[in-house]
Length: 237
Image (cartoon, rainbow, N blue to C red; front, side, top):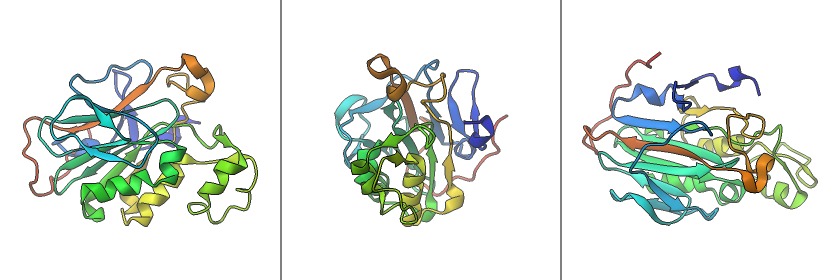
């Protein structure tokens, strides 16, 4: 995919992608890693099981349990998911200052992990901003009829979901969040395909040799959670 698909995202000198809209909140830190980037220390992570389970980190660090979404609501907390074609989603409730990192593979998408994480955030959807990071794109995500048929709810306009076809994992999750009343203008899609892009790990491309990329989001240590909405700051160049 071309770089202009990622409009609204930028890559830092440390080879990390950032959503410019999320950069607008001074209390929030985040990043979508690549194969060349380093992730922050002291992350909270999960043993990911392609589920619809969201876990509250409660200030813990390291591997804290099984599930596919982590929620943080404490200053200094950083939560992360690992991907290598699956979709990482970073959410922020900008009024209550709560954040979530979501791992959405096709199984988690069918189980509505994004919408269920939004519910677990206990946020007004109008206050939520969500960035959907690099993942396998519709150019490369070919699936059989058994998988495709499970996406009819999210692609009712498609008549080819009864056969081998391709799916847009990011769009399915975007529609899921739209259905949950998150405003369209607060959903940011990177549109970068991990299988096409050599800067990313891809299980479909590299199989057992594939590494994993970290995507993280957190609340800066200097901030107090539970306050009123922070006004966006100007994005840094």
